Image 1 (cartoon, rainbow, N blue to C red):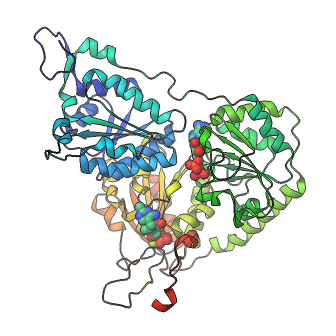
Image 2 (image 1 turned 180 degrees about the vertical axis):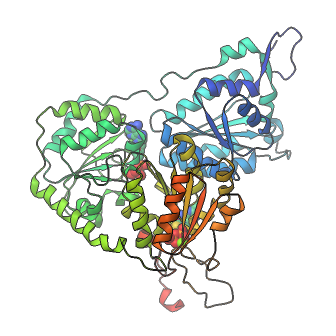
Length: 576
Ligand code: ADP
Ligand code: TZD
Ligand code: MG
């Protein structure tokens, strides 16, 4: 019979179809979980995949399923799979696909799509859209599978594209017709492809390794910056060994916190401004010199000339913002191991006046912060509430922290120490609000560890409906909402009319009731003691819990720590 037709030929023998081929292809490649929202044309596919032993988690909105898939990719080094319906469902998932690509997380967005013939002639099919064309600019690669016999190779291509080199998002377009296409089962089995070595090691050139070590050896004030690429690489032991053998102070980017504990003697997290300004050689490991690091230049980096060593799998990352004196291109595991090997047994420690100065600054800042974290103010301020959560994470280092908001994000990042790799998940490169519940769900599902999601009240609103999903699957997620009645602060007043100001919400909102609506535990916490009790109980019980932490509405500042990025109106004075 001709392969990939919808009508079985009389003599075709045992048959299979697009539904089963796709499920078999996913299973063959070790896919265990799909995050999505059902509907035409993928409802039956979801049911069948579930029946075949794949965990299919249904969300309330595709964007949250997408963020779940993206972070699953980050946590597992395998592409997270998001499944959506056509046009609107696809578009809802697309933000997460773009986010995955921007953050270098491997993810595959698989969307059903409408009749090609009708879509291409724009004849108005159900949920008509040229999804492939739309997706192309938002991801690493985009493919469409038209024939059942191409499902095996199509999925293989998508997997390899997502995880090899710099990881990222891949779009896979699955027209409705594909699912029903039948073909001979034996031919179908043979058409499947198990991807061999999907993310091959990329060994750095020995010259590049030597150059990097020469630069590092000559440094008077060296610094190592660890980014989330380093956390993603799962080369934890080698990275720790390299950092310790070098004796160099290290600064973790937010999601790299915990790769080495924030309490490690070489951690310079609490001396960030000092080490950025005063260092003379900076070794970047899986971090980019983007806006989060002021593009590697300007005031934050001080006047003294710097030399950068950069370890990254993406050659084009080198010299993206400033000159890289020693580019080391390869995968982080191989690169760090090569550096370690070439360092030999007698690597000189960095000058003690530098390491001593960094340590002194760090200790000074930690000491300054300590009393603020112990305050018992009611209503709570950020520091009082975060001091409680900091202690809880210290006592329960397995817990995965998810964090979004503005003040809630920036202050929690500084206050809450992380002790193990990949235990802090947040808004990533874009500073996107809405990752919270998707990340919390995927973190619980992929790791089995309890999750503490520390959320601004605005940030939570972007994905809040997924508390139902958390309850439905009974996940060990404790959401703490820093409820300051608004975006940044809850105190703005609109002087021009009856509408509330643009940044404030309903005062005294009780988000805890949302969790109760679906059978979870809701707690209204007005003091640090309330908060401590509620979160400990939630993490002990592993029951879905939402704690509405009442925060002083005037405690935050505009845009948290990045208010300087707001454009200023030249007419501001006149308007005021
Ligand atoms: P952060 O936001 O923490 O500073 P970025 O997302 O900006 O981190 O940078 C991560 C970098 O890590 C990217 O440039 C990416 O190419 C790189 N990367 C990701 N995985 C690997 C890997 N396995 N080996 C080498 N580099 C990697
Ligand atoms: N939309 C999206 C998708 N991402 C964004 N980053 C924003 C809007 C803008 N934004 C921020 O950058 S932070 C934030 C918004 C809306 C919310 C801050 O309020 P919060 O946190 O309640 O979450 P705090 O503690 O009140 O500062
Ligand atoms: Mg708020």
